[in-house]
Length: 492
Image 1 (tube, one colour):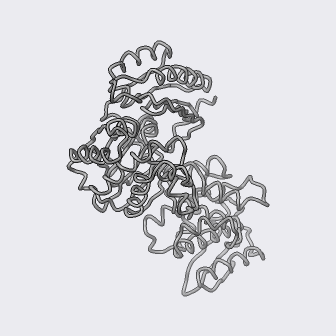
Image 2 (tube, rainbow, N blue to C red):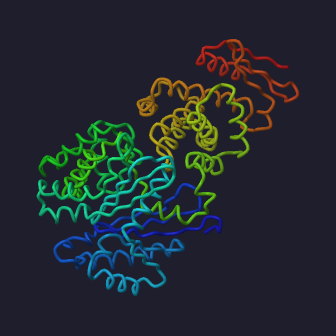
């Protein structure tokens, strides 16, 4: 394994399931090269017995022995186990950890306090959504962690016994009793009212399952939970439907994961009460949580401070592009086309320039579609769905996709008319730039593109050895037409 791409591994040992993730590298965005989950139900019966479930413990020893072997074989170091609510609350939790440690020599096993768990969940949300502003709700099998998040920081962590397994056991599997229990516990968190007109960030497998059900209901064009966002009323309707439906009705719902049928009514009950008490503006589902927070805490602070969207773009430029000096040149070259550009729009344009050569080594017959799918479905956690759609459409058009091609429709569905038009203009401009320069900043420096008096003026430096061939004129004409300008090309 190359030294510059070290690997590390984290095991998230929860009340319901256990998951191993192996990360590669020390980049701003976590790169998971192995991800495996097993359902243990370690916290089943904890409410009544105060002890970890014996079947869950026996299975945990087997599964974690496998995870240890996998992580070592992949060259991961360190390997750390993070145990959450069930282990910290059980009377036999310490004995279980001691037994586990004897079976996993050299592996750090950390039993997280509720505050530690909330802190890592918040770091995980910030890893993917640096400008998050509102409340994080991280639900597991044993507990619910709540905390305020704003300005890149977080505060006010609270841990409540409202994980889906524990809530069901506390309520005797009675939804009416569950509502009363949730209300009583949430009343102890007075700052929930500060959520009004801000966002509620949902972390945890039960929440993600709710998101998948909603996506299936509305035929959402991008089946990716991370940063899936819905309004408060949509979230309330979803929560009411799941919380009040019977098992048979839940089984018939599209997108319903079979293993979550018992848990989801209780997760929906918690969500319903959070929406009522906090009145958030939107609900944002985050696939980035405790494990990504652990990863972020391990990388250098200067890397952690990077913009995850631009870091993803630079990753593509270094991994798939031909010249890492070309994207900065394109950022300057395309700026003239977008005067008075808002900062959010500039950020997307810069990311598109960084990603603009990622199809260089693909087959030319499939380059546009391959590039589109690579961007639209990329694993980078710093992209919301609108950004994915904008960048994917831009890069497909940079590779001269027909704007009406069917594979572009999912992206167009997620964009308003103005954003789609901006993507078209930027994609055509990038195509023109690569046609002129062959993807080299040296040749691009011999070309100037300006908007002047209703004209789109292309000026070539005669010393650069470039010429205005048919393909260049055709692409200039298309770009000018998209911008509502008259094309003019000259050598001077």
